[in-house]
Amino acid sequence: MPDELLHLPVIQSILAREKATPGALLPILHALQDALGFIPEAAVDEIAHALNLSLAEVRGVISFYHDFRTTPPARHTLRLCRAESCQSRGSEALAAQLREQLALDDHGTSADGAISLRPVYCLGACACSPALQLDGQVHARLTPERLRALVNGCLEDQPC
Ligand code: FES
Image 1 (cartoon, rainbow, N blue to C red):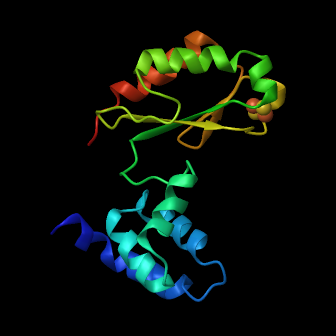
Image 2: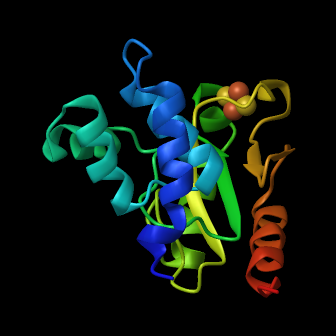
């Protein structure tokens, strides 16, 4: 079954539930990403039609917010904190280490689908800066060595 048909029941269910909500576009996009891990291209047409918006309006909102994904997520998501406390404790150097080790930018995904990088602005672990979140779990008091070990663990983790 083509991917666009695979996701259609989820898309239609979310649209039926949310389209009457005032300012429905963002709640719909969030619900889709929560349900599917990303916003498939097939959803853009369906959303535009349901909300009487142009395709460009829907795509513009998706591209404006970095947290919305238009491709399936990687197996691991690493969010390095870039806010003030972590910056003062070396997060920019850790970000540079990540970019170099993975050959990705701050919002990139590795070609093998192992890991995605996303910046985040405070994880509530300021007292233990610098910090990151890996697959929802916070790791604090990072060092270059700990960061490299975490990333290596992700890269060694093969898909089932
Ligand atoms: S500034 Fe990084 S956890 Fe708060």
